Image (cartoon, rainbow, N blue to C red; front, side, top):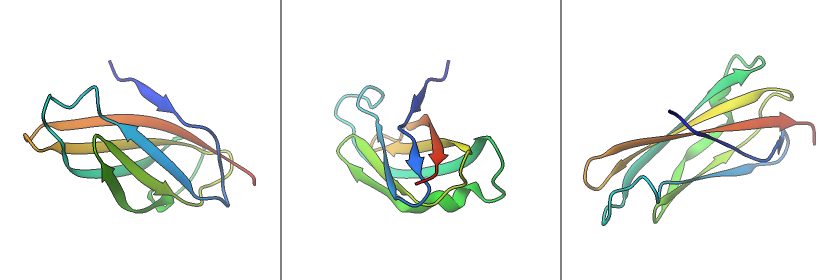
Length: 102
């Protein structure tokens, strides 16, 4: 079963920090070695959903933070966060983000 986080709505004109906490999934003693985030359309229409992703995620302890910019008003994006742990484990989390007018 996959659980998704639901983030607060994001105004199209304001950058947003999406935080994914992997504390419960990482094995004891392991840290996040690398991270990535992909954006896809969950509902609505955006021909270039990955354009909301600005740069690469920042790793801080057992969390990653990704800056998101822009977006199409009314679209709900599915965010797929992936990490590889220091022990070589591949972990993922998903979140939903809705874009509103400023």
